[in-house]
Image (cartoon, rainbow, N blue to C red):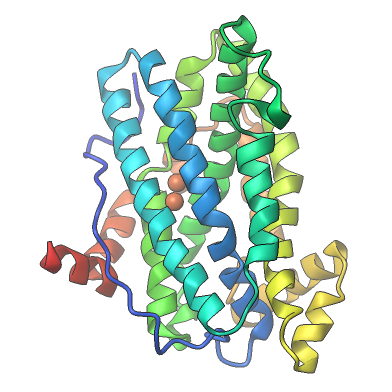
Length: 305
Ligand SMILES: [Fe+2]
Ligand SMILES: [Fe+2]
Protein backbone atom coordinates (compact mmCIF):
# COMPACT_ATOMS: atom_id res chain seq x y z
CA UNK A 1 0.00 0.00 0.00
CA UNK A 2 1.05 3.55 -0.61
CA UNK A 3 2.00 5.40 2.53
CA UNK A 4 1.20 8.77 0.98
CA UNK A 5 -1.12 10.95 2.98
CA UNK A 6 -4.66 10.50 1.81
CA UNK A 7 -5.31 13.54 -0.28
CA UNK A 8 -5.46 13.64 -4.05
CA UNK A 9 -2.33 14.93 -5.79
CA UNK A 10 -3.56 17.18 -8.55
CA UNK A 11 -1.96 19.47 -11.08
CA UNK A 12 -2.64 23.17 -10.72
CA UNK A 13 -2.50 25.83 -13.37
CA UNK A 14 -0.14 28.70 -12.65
CA UNK A 15 0.38 32.10 -14.19
CA UNK A 16 3.75 33.86 -13.94
CA UNK A 17 4.78 37.17 -15.44
CA UNK A 18 8.57 37.33 -15.20
CA UNK A 19 8.91 40.25 -17.65
CA UNK A 20 9.85 42.75 -14.93
CA UNK A 21 12.00 40.41 -12.85
CA UNK A 22 15.78 40.91 -12.80
CA UNK A 23 18.17 37.95 -13.16
CA UNK A 24 19.90 39.09 -9.97
CA UNK A 25 16.62 38.68 -8.11
CA UNK A 26 18.08 38.31 -4.61
CA UNK A 27 19.44 41.71 -3.57
CA UNK A 28 23.22 41.92 -3.11
CA UNK A 29 23.56 38.19 -3.73
CA UNK A 30 24.63 37.37 -7.28
CA UNK A 31 25.84 33.94 -6.16
CA UNK A 32 22.50 32.72 -4.79
CA UNK A 33 20.53 34.35 -7.63
CA UNK A 34 22.49 32.38 -10.23
CA UNK A 35 22.55 29.16 -8.23
CA UNK A 36 18.74 29.19 -8.06
CA UNK A 37 18.31 30.48 -11.63
CA UNK A 38 20.41 27.62 -12.97
CA UNK A 39 17.73 25.22 -11.79
CA UNK A 40 15.50 26.63 -14.58
CA UNK A 41 17.89 25.08 -17.11
CA UNK A 42 17.86 21.69 -15.46
CA UNK A 43 14.23 21.09 -14.61
CA UNK A 44 12.39 21.06 -17.93
CA UNK A 45 14.46 18.17 -19.34
CA UNK A 46 14.66 16.41 -15.96
CA UNK A 47 10.98 16.57 -15.11
CA UNK A 48 9.83 15.56 -18.59
CA UNK A 49 12.16 12.56 -18.23
CA UNK A 50 10.40 11.75 -14.91
CA UNK A 51 7.09 11.78 -16.80
CA UNK A 52 8.38 9.46 -19.56
CA UNK A 53 9.82 6.96 -17.08
CA UNK A 54 6.67 7.00 -14.94
CA UNK A 55 4.43 6.46 -17.95
CA UNK A 56 6.49 3.33 -18.63
CA UNK A 57 6.21 2.29 -14.98
CA UNK A 58 2.43 2.79 -14.67
CA UNK A 59 1.46 -0.65 -16.10
CA UNK A 60 3.57 -2.25 -13.35
CA UNK A 61 1.65 -0.54 -10.52
CA UNK A 62 -0.89 -2.87 -8.95
CA UNK A 63 -1.91 -0.68 -6.00
CA UNK A 64 -4.83 1.58 -7.04
CA UNK A 65 -3.98 4.39 -4.59
CA UNK A 66 -0.34 4.42 -5.65
CA UNK A 67 -1.43 4.46 -9.29
CA UNK A 68 -3.55 7.55 -8.62
CA UNK A 69 -0.62 9.20 -6.84
CA UNK A 70 1.73 8.42 -9.73
CA UNK A 71 -0.72 9.90 -12.25
CA UNK A 72 -1.03 13.05 -10.09
CA UNK A 73 2.77 13.20 -9.83
CA UNK A 74 3.18 12.98 -13.62
CA UNK A 75 0.70 15.82 -14.12
CA UNK A 76 2.36 18.05 -11.51
CA UNK A 77 5.84 17.45 -12.92
CA UNK A 78 4.61 18.21 -16.45
CA UNK A 79 3.39 21.63 -15.30
CA UNK A 80 6.64 22.23 -13.37
CA UNK A 81 8.60 21.57 -16.58
CA UNK A 82 6.44 24.07 -18.50
CA UNK A 83 6.85 26.73 -15.80
CA UNK A 84 10.63 26.42 -15.75
CA UNK A 85 10.77 26.46 -19.54
CA UNK A 86 9.33 29.97 -19.13
CA UNK A 87 12.03 30.61 -16.53
CA UNK A 88 14.62 29.53 -19.08
CA UNK A 89 13.13 31.89 -21.69
CA UNK A 90 13.21 34.72 -19.11
CA UNK A 91 16.98 34.22 -18.74
CA UNK A 92 17.46 34.00 -22.52
CA UNK A 93 15.52 37.27 -22.95
CA UNK A 94 18.05 38.93 -20.65
CA UNK A 95 20.91 37.88 -22.88
CA UNK A 96 22.07 34.69 -21.18
CA UNK A 97 23.11 31.78 -23.38
CA UNK A 98 21.13 28.93 -21.81
CA UNK A 99 21.56 26.48 -24.67
CA UNK A 100 25.13 25.36 -23.99
CA UNK A 101 24.32 24.06 -20.50
CA UNK A 102 20.94 22.79 -21.67
CA UNK A 103 22.59 20.61 -24.33
CA UNK A 104 24.56 18.86 -21.57
CA UNK A 105 21.38 18.30 -19.56
CA UNK A 106 19.47 17.05 -22.60
CA UNK A 107 22.27 14.52 -23.23
CA UNK A 108 22.05 13.33 -19.63
CA UNK A 109 18.30 12.72 -19.66
CA UNK A 110 17.63 11.84 -23.30
CA UNK A 111 20.76 9.88 -24.28
CA UNK A 112 22.38 8.50 -21.12
CA UNK A 113 19.16 7.85 -19.19
CA UNK A 114 16.81 7.31 -22.13
CA UNK A 115 15.04 4.19 -23.37
CA UNK A 116 18.19 3.18 -25.22
CA UNK A 117 21.08 4.32 -23.03
CA UNK A 118 23.85 5.67 -25.26
CA UNK A 119 21.87 4.34 -28.23
CA UNK A 120 22.06 0.71 -27.10
CA UNK A 121 18.92 -1.16 -28.11
CA UNK A 122 19.86 -4.53 -26.58
CA UNK A 123 17.49 -3.91 -23.67
CA UNK A 124 14.36 -4.42 -25.75
CA UNK A 125 12.13 -7.26 -24.51
CA UNK A 126 14.65 -8.62 -22.06
CA UNK A 127 14.76 -8.82 -18.29
CA UNK A 128 17.29 -6.02 -18.51
CA UNK A 129 14.60 -3.71 -19.88
CA UNK A 130 12.59 -4.07 -16.64
CA UNK A 131 15.75 -3.67 -14.53
CA UNK A 132 16.66 -0.51 -16.44
CA UNK A 133 13.17 0.85 -15.73
CA UNK A 134 13.44 0.02 -11.99
CA UNK A 135 16.88 1.64 -11.82
CA UNK A 136 15.52 4.83 -13.37
CA UNK A 137 12.55 4.80 -10.97
CA UNK A 138 15.16 4.55 -8.19
CA UNK A 139 17.12 7.48 -9.59
CA UNK A 140 13.93 9.55 -9.57
CA UNK A 141 13.28 8.54 -5.94
CA UNK A 142 16.77 9.75 -4.98
CA UNK A 143 16.35 13.03 -6.88
CA UNK A 144 12.94 13.52 -5.26
CA UNK A 145 14.61 13.15 -1.88
CA UNK A 146 16.48 16.36 -2.72
CA UNK A 147 13.48 18.22 -4.11
CA UNK A 148 11.54 17.23 -0.97
CA UNK A 149 14.23 18.36 1.46
CA UNK A 150 14.77 21.59 -0.47
CA UNK A 151 11.02 22.10 -0.37
CA UNK A 152 10.94 21.61 3.38
CA UNK A 153 13.83 24.08 3.73
CA UNK A 154 11.99 26.61 1.55
CA UNK A 155 8.67 26.26 3.39
CA UNK A 156 10.47 27.11 6.65
CA UNK A 157 12.51 30.02 5.31
CA UNK A 158 11.52 33.65 4.76
CA UNK A 159 14.84 34.70 3.23
CA UNK A 160 13.38 35.02 -0.28
CA UNK A 161 10.85 37.60 0.99
CA UNK A 162 13.44 40.25 0.20
CA UNK A 163 13.87 39.01 -3.39
CA UNK A 164 11.83 39.51 -6.54
CA UNK A 165 8.33 38.25 -5.65
CA UNK A 166 7.59 36.56 -9.00
CA UNK A 167 10.83 34.53 -9.13
CA UNK A 168 10.47 33.68 -5.44
CA UNK A 169 6.92 32.46 -6.06
CA UNK A 170 7.97 30.36 -9.07
CA UNK A 171 10.37 28.36 -6.89
CA UNK A 172 8.20 28.39 -3.76
CA UNK A 173 5.10 27.12 -5.55
CA UNK A 174 7.17 24.38 -7.19
CA UNK A 175 8.88 23.39 -3.95
CA UNK A 176 5.54 23.36 -2.10
CA UNK A 177 4.26 20.80 -4.63
CA UNK A 178 7.50 18.84 -4.17
CA UNK A 179 6.67 18.62 -0.45
CA UNK A 180 3.09 17.67 -1.31
CA UNK A 181 4.13 14.69 -3.51
CA UNK A 182 7.34 13.79 -1.61
CA UNK A 183 6.28 10.21 -0.86
CA UNK A 184 5.25 9.13 -4.35
CA UNK A 185 8.64 8.38 -5.92
CA UNK A 186 9.86 6.49 -2.86
CA UNK A 187 6.67 4.43 -2.67
CA UNK A 188 6.79 3.62 -6.37
CA UNK A 189 10.41 2.51 -6.14
CA UNK A 190 9.62 0.27 -3.16
CA UNK A 191 6.60 -1.12 -5.01
CA UNK A 192 8.73 -2.06 -8.04
CA UNK A 193 11.54 -3.70 -6.06
CA UNK A 194 11.08 -7.40 -5.49
CA UNK A 195 12.25 -7.68 -1.89
CA UNK A 196 12.73 -5.46 1.16
CA UNK A 197 16.48 -6.19 1.43
CA UNK A 198 16.88 -5.60 -2.31
CA UNK A 199 15.02 -2.30 -2.02
CA UNK A 200 17.18 -1.14 0.89
CA UNK A 201 20.49 -2.06 -0.75
CA UNK A 202 19.59 -0.71 -4.17
CA UNK A 203 18.32 2.62 -2.82
CA UNK A 204 21.64 3.11 -0.99
CA UNK A 205 23.56 2.33 -4.19
CA UNK A 206 21.37 4.67 -6.22
CA UNK A 207 21.84 7.51 -3.72
CA UNK A 208 25.63 7.01 -3.78
CA UNK A 209 25.41 7.52 -7.55
CA UNK A 210 22.89 10.37 -7.59
CA UNK A 211 24.22 12.55 -4.75
CA UNK A 212 27.53 13.65 -6.37
CA UNK A 213 25.91 14.07 -9.79
CA UNK A 214 23.06 16.14 -8.30
CA UNK A 215 25.52 18.45 -6.47
CA UNK A 216 27.69 18.82 -9.58
CA UNK A 217 24.80 19.58 -11.92
CA UNK A 218 23.17 22.15 -9.61
CA UNK A 219 26.43 24.04 -9.09
CA UNK A 220 27.35 23.89 -12.78
CA UNK A 221 24.03 25.48 -13.74
CA UNK A 222 24.76 28.49 -11.52
CA UNK A 223 28.35 28.69 -12.69
CA UNK A 224 27.33 28.63 -16.37
CA UNK A 225 25.14 31.70 -15.84
CA UNK A 226 27.50 33.59 -13.51
CA UNK A 227 30.33 33.26 -16.04
CA UNK A 228 28.30 35.31 -18.50
CA UNK A 229 28.13 38.33 -16.17
CA UNK A 230 30.73 40.95 -16.92
CA UNK A 231 30.96 42.15 -13.31
CA UNK A 232 33.73 40.81 -11.04
CA UNK A 233 31.27 38.93 -8.78
CA UNK A 234 30.06 36.75 -11.66
CA UNK A 235 33.57 36.13 -12.98
CA UNK A 236 34.75 35.12 -9.53
CA UNK A 237 31.96 32.53 -9.23
CA UNK A 238 32.71 31.15 -12.71
CA UNK A 239 36.33 30.48 -11.77
CA UNK A 240 35.49 28.50 -8.63
CA UNK A 241 35.98 24.77 -8.57
CA UNK A 242 33.33 22.53 -7.04
CA UNK A 243 34.88 22.58 -3.57
CA UNK A 244 35.08 26.40 -3.50
CA UNK A 245 31.46 26.57 -4.62
CA UNK A 246 30.35 24.25 -1.83
CA UNK A 247 32.23 26.39 0.70
CA UNK A 248 30.51 29.48 -0.68
CA UNK A 249 27.10 27.79 -0.47
CA UNK A 250 27.77 26.95 3.18
CA UNK A 251 28.93 30.48 4.00
CA UNK A 252 26.11 32.15 2.07
CA UNK A 253 23.47 29.94 3.65
CA UNK A 254 24.78 30.77 7.13
CA UNK A 255 25.08 34.48 6.37
CA UNK A 256 21.79 35.34 4.70
CA UNK A 257 19.75 32.12 4.39
CA UNK A 258 19.22 32.58 0.64
CA UNK A 259 20.33 29.00 -0.02
CA UNK A 260 20.28 25.94 2.24
CA UNK A 261 23.67 25.17 3.77
CA UNK A 262 25.65 22.15 2.57
CA UNK A 263 25.60 20.83 6.14
CA UNK A 264 21.79 20.94 6.13
CA UNK A 265 21.65 19.00 2.85
CA UNK A 266 24.19 16.45 4.12
CA UNK A 267 22.36 15.92 7.39
CA UNK A 268 19.05 15.39 5.62
CA UNK A 269 20.65 13.09 3.02
CA UNK A 270 22.16 10.88 5.73
CA UNK A 271 18.63 10.14 6.97
CA UNK A 272 18.17 8.17 3.74
CA UNK A 273 20.60 5.55 5.10
CA UNK A 274 18.20 4.40 7.80
CA UNK A 275 16.29 1.19 6.96
CA UNK A 276 13.23 2.90 8.48
CA UNK A 277 13.51 6.04 6.38
CA UNK A 278 10.35 7.25 4.71
CA UNK A 279 9.87 10.75 3.19
CA UNK A 280 6.52 11.22 4.93
CA UNK A 281 8.47 12.55 7.94
CA UNK A 282 10.57 14.94 5.82
CA UNK A 283 8.07 17.76 5.40
CA UNK A 284 4.67 19.12 6.36
CA UNK A 285 1.92 18.66 3.77
CA UNK A 286 -0.43 21.15 5.46
CA UNK A 287 2.28 23.80 5.44
CA UNK A 288 2.94 23.20 1.73
CA UNK A 289 -0.77 23.36 0.87
CA UNK A 290 -1.06 26.60 2.87
CA UNK A 291 1.67 28.13 0.71
CA UNK A 292 -0.02 26.95 -2.50
CA UNK A 293 -3.29 28.52 -1.30
CA UNK A 294 -1.59 31.93 -1.04
CA UNK A 295 0.81 31.59 -4.00
CA UNK A 296 0.08 34.51 -6.38
CA UNK A 297 0.81 32.37 -9.46
CA UNK A 298 -1.35 29.45 -8.30
CA UNK A 299 -4.16 31.83 -7.29
CA UNK A 300 -4.01 33.56 -10.70
CA UNK A 301 -3.97 30.16 -12.44
CA UNK A 302 -6.97 28.93 -10.45
CA UNK A 303 -9.05 32.01 -11.18
CA UNK A 304 -8.19 31.86 -14.92
CA UNK A 305 -9.34 28.24 -15.25
FE1 LIG B 1 8.81 19.21 -9.85
FE1 LIG C 1 8.82 16.17 -7.77
